[in-house]
Length: 440
Ligand code: AVJ
Ligand code: FE
Figure 1 (cartoon, rainbow, N blue to C red):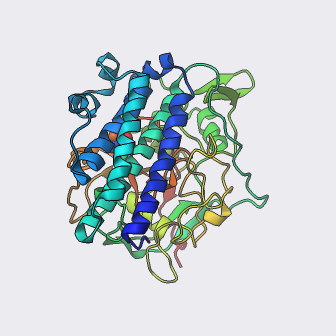
Figure 2 (cartoon, rainbow, N blue to C red):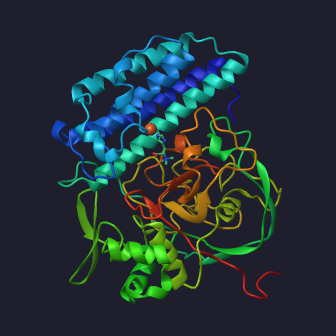
Figure 3 (cartoon, rainbow, N blue to C red):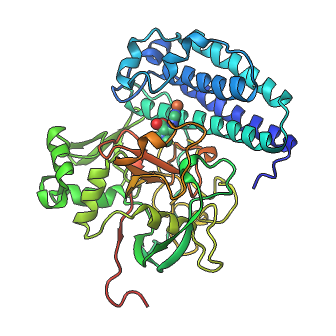
């Protein structure tokens, strides 16, 4: 991928950081100061916290660590350490106000660019520094997606606007495809910006399975809803059933039943639920129940990655379903270019060799796998990025959403969340074991 000469590292890193910052500024300039400091949901930080946290991480990793420079604002480190304060408590902290936060991130960025220009980027130091710049770019883009989710939770008139995503070609996709059994290489050692939990590359044997060619659509999900799926104990795990009842959950987040059908609110727009579009804002429990209702199951994480990366011709694992090239607007719905998932089949150029569509972009996809380290996992650059989350309480999501930037997604990228969460842009697709005679 990146032939990391110091020159092209500098150019690439500067461009990626600048793009991320334009997005952070747009997301925070879209609302007034009162909205910036308000907590729109107990699940989210005030937008002004995300903004200063982005700056604080950049100061720690680029200015202080790579650059060896003096701290700008050591006294605020603790306020923006995500492990010191739960999201629900962040509004009551003595946070930087909107003007101060904006000035702070600007000042940090000037210093980070100075480091990028002057730091001796050579040998192993180059690899390490390149990683720090890549990690901080991804970190800002991840928080931009989090801020986009906060926008979705915000009440009021629409403030974000974007063109509609492309429509699918007229020919309908086959519903499912068989992924032949056998070994493939999961994870990566070579991706320069891959985070610790994606490493190292290792072989996994995945028996033959059948996978949906597209994420489950709202139209299909409405059938589950309207046939009484949320009232039928059989489709739900014990934890899922308790969750439904404890939280009085009757439909995906942001949906409402109105005379004439299902409606939803999307970034302040009230609209009929679009039947051809992947369902979004469902929890793992709802995804799992739908799959059981459909006579299927969720894919495991290795199944998902094999479908997304395994090239049956060469036997090699690729970076993306379509090959090794970076995502373009033809491949996938990424980067908040659109404010919604695109209808199933809308990205034929992004399909895998076996014809699985929209694995990257549109909606994060719940898998049935709990978050854990791969064999040979080693935490870097800090334990708190992933290792402290390993265990049965977090489920892995794959593929990124319309709100994920290309800088923060790969075929190997792993996201995770609690199975009850649905403020993230999460949907799913189903898998199943092949029926007798189906595997030739
Ligand atoms: C990988 C999306 C679960 O937002 O909690 C941001 C990414 N880590 N700052 C999160 C992250 C530290 C993380 N997720
Ligand atoms: Fe963070």
